[in-house]
Image (cartoon, rainbow, N blue to C red; front, side, top):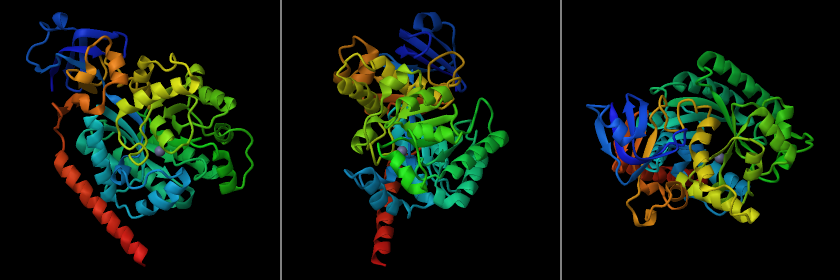
Length: 451
Ligand SMILES: [Zn+2]
């Protein structure tokens, strides 16, 4: 579809900066022109028009850490420590989840993401052929890196699922979906299996990937202070130094890895992350909720590490509002270091857009509004009391806007939400399916507890 988005303020996050009374021209799936309205208006004819007056056009937000299917368990168990939360609540419930449940949870998350201006989601969950996050994202028209999460206790199942996921989905749905290999964490994947997963990734990349569309790694790294102790206990190995240093000793680190959380890092760990080109996904709300600690983000950025933002699942956030994550990230590090100049608004917005694209090795195509890039865009309605008066668009986007201010969203040049109406799936139907799935899961858990 050929579109002209006209009359709004365009926050490009690219070389053209902020363009007031600007225009973005989209042909098929790509941005073909960006500039001042009066320069471009006469140049393009016959395009469908979106009037963006009073609105701000931004690159679609990129959520670099999610477990989309877990949206089905939002609010099921809150306020527990990570270990107890996983072992007593989340994992026993997840045991009962079928492919269909995963699909429903992911569809709910896809709708929520789109309605909050998120156009790309990096998600880690179980891949099942009979219902998957990839299927849900493709249906909703959401861009995603969809992984299969690997654990030492189910290697055969993982090996099969990884091959199926890559074959079935990598590069599919008009290029919206990419596959990834997701070792769950350092304490649930033994060292030998970690090395094997690196080999499997190389093998899958040879078969299905390309330099422009790689199959990546996505894993939890150094989420809590006791992670080295957990590795020692799980695999009876002695570790000197930090978790990243341990991973480096296995020779598995590379620039194709999104390391999520990175809370408990040593100075040496930070140096290794930079040296190996590992990208960090910072999830401040999840870290606060699970009381995991605070990632040394200012030090990581100072060291030159790419740091992007993520929500984490709807069990530990509990929503997928990337505006909330931007604001929390910007506030948290100021508070901790008693320095209001740390992580300024523009940097937070970069982390949610272009840095997110870099983290997913997708920055040649998405993450900023520039000629030749794919049209993944969010249009934010600024005609609201909490976004008025307007001195500075970026200040409002980070400190005052929220997901519900997003008015229209394009992904791959296609309108997936217009005036807050999702065009790809029936939102009310998704909400109904979700409640039904919740009831059915509770019934299955009840049956098990009776036995
Ligand atoms: Zn996570």
